[in-house]
Image (cartoon, rainbow, N blue to C red; front, side, top):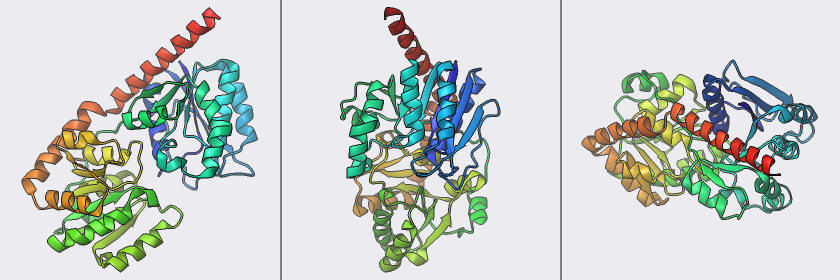
Amino acid sequence: MKILHVIPGLANSSGPSQVVSHLVREACASGHECSLYYATGRNADCEVTIHPDCDVQGFPALGLKKWGYSPEMKRAVLSKVPNCDIVHCHSMWLYPTMIAARTAYRAGVPYIIRPAGSLEPWCVRGLKKQLYLKLIERTILDRASAIHAVSQQEANNVKSFGFRAPAVVVPNGVDIAESGPSRSEARRLLGLPEDRPIVLFLSRIHEKKGLDVLGEAMLDVRKRLPAAMVAVAGPDSHEYAKKIKQLYKDLGIIDATRFLGEVSGELKQAAYRAADVFALPTHSENFGVVVLEALAEGTPVVVSKNAPWAAVEERRAGFWIENTPLALSHALTTILSNPDLHEEMSRNAKDFVIEQFSWASIGRSIEQMYQQIIARSQTLIEIA
C-alpha cells in the first residue's frame, strides 16, 4: 500500500506526533510505502524520530502559522494524493488536514480522520470551533471513509454528532521496555528523594488535565501520609504552570511538589519508574497515552472517569474514579499505604499492556482497517 499520513505539526511532546511515528514504523516494517507531511513553524520542538524508510516532508507555515497554512504543502499534497491508496489525517481544525482531506475526496482516494480528541465535549465548547465544525469540518468528516477513534468512549462522542462516516476503534499502543533504571536509580537521575511516597503527574500542564484536583487531593493525602509528595512533569501550556504553582503555594503543598519540566526518552521512563503511583485527574481525554505508558512501566494508575480507562480497575491495575479531590485522595492513599496491593497492581499493569497494547498488534489492526477501506472503495468505483 501507498500510505500518506498528514499531521499539522511534529513535536516531541505531542501525543499525536508520537502515535504517527509508531504507525509509520509498523507500516514500513510490513513493507508498505509511507509518506508523512506536516507544517513547520507551528511547534518549537520537532525532534520526533521517524522510520528512515518513510518519506518525511515538512512545509513552512505562512501567515496564520497557528492554523498551519502552507502553499507549499498544498502543492505537494495535490501532486502526492492521486498516487496514494489511502490518506490518514491526524487531528482537526487546521489547514494541513483540511487540504489533505479535500484533495483526497476530489481525487477519489479514501481518507481517514483521526480526531485525536478534537471532538471531545471539552474541546468543542467554544463558539469558534462550533462554527468551524459547521462550516468546514462537518463536510470533511461526512466524506471520510472512516473516523479513527482510539477508544469506545471517543467513538460514542463521534457518533453523537451524526456524521455519515463510521467510527472505527483502534487504540493507541506502547513500546514495552525490556530494560531501564531501578526505582532508586530513577529517583537519583531525577533528583527525587529515595524514601518518600511519590505521586507522578506527567502530561501537558493545561487546565483540562486536572492539576487543580490533584493539588486539593494531595492536601488530604498528606494529612494521612505526611511524607507524600507529587512530581509534576510535562510541557507548560499557555503559562498554566504559574497558576498551578500559586495554587499549590496557597494550599501549602508547594514544598512537597517537584516540577520536573518536560521529560522525554530515558528521563520519561525514569519518571514513571521513580513514582509509586501515577495520577491523571483529567477533565477530558479521548485516550490518555500517558496512562498506557505508566502501566507499561508497572506503575499503578489512578485516572478519572473522564478518560476511557475502566479496564484499569477491571484488571486491578489501579483505580478509575469520579474526578473529585476526595475520590482521588482516597485512591492514592489506598495504594500508597498498602504495599501488597501496590505490588499486585504493578504486576497486573504490565500483564495488561503486554496482552492488549503492543505496537505490533496495533499496527496489524491499522493495516486491516486500511485494507477493508480500500477494498470497499474499489467496490464502489466498480459499481459506479
